[in-house]
Length: 95
Image 1 (tube, rainbow, N blue to C red):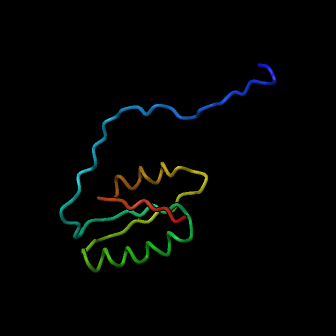
Image 2: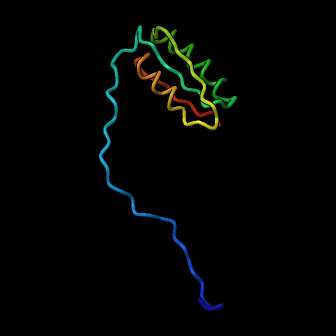
Image 3: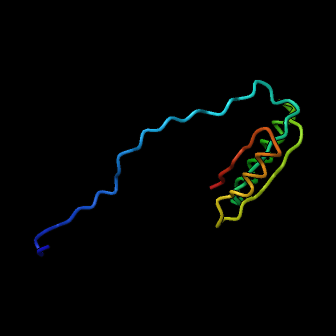
């Protein structure tokens, strides 16, 4: 490469086509156990307290299981635990 040449790197790759299906949504969540996966940011804690209260008062949600992931971890262990302990999960970002 000479001093008069400029190399431009384009980091954009063509998207890979994939088919995804959304999980089946329950028609009623009354009595269900909900899991909360907190990413550890302070603002998620402020929000989720209100969400928990509304889910119980308005929709009759039963038990709640709350895990907080370590910031350096993707939360894989907590996700595996929640998948066997509850019927649906709210995975939160609080940034």
